[in-house]
Image (cartoon, rainbow, N blue to C red; front, side, top):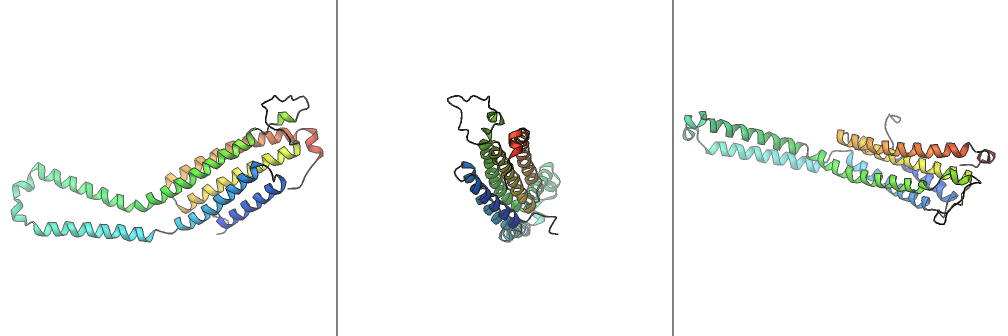
Length: 240
């Protein structure tokens, strides 16, 4: 179903288009470079999810070979130890029962660890990708940090250390809107990992990133609402 799953190609196309929009409107600002970084991450995520979605067949073959080898060793050991040499007293003793239980538990735990090895490898790859997305989210937040609607007031008096203020109300509104769109795309890129690796731990990590992006986006839209409420911002409208 095309509308029940995210398409990495379409997300990448949307990211590339957003980058072009930002470069056309703000060619000399750092936000254009951030948009280029997000586009680079989108290409990387698309390639990674294509590798993570199918099973890792070579790893499954290795696990199966290790399980077969372990089973063969148990059978071989059992075949070379005659039961008449073990003795009924040793079998019935507490030490013998305890040793058998420990061996069984360790064997089961080893099998479980081998079976889950593929999921662990995929989680490690996803964790590295999510860390990069989380970092770029904070970079986007740093770029919108100094875009304060208060500076648009004619009564605002900058200080000597105030950052450069050369955006009008319309320009600042578009700048903040682009930041919000970049945050939204990073959330969709994170969701691609959860779609490719249906794991509870991955889903929780992706949910944390989406919540982080959403909370920062809400702050941005509060600024946009303040700007749009100003009469000067309503008189002039610019295309996307």
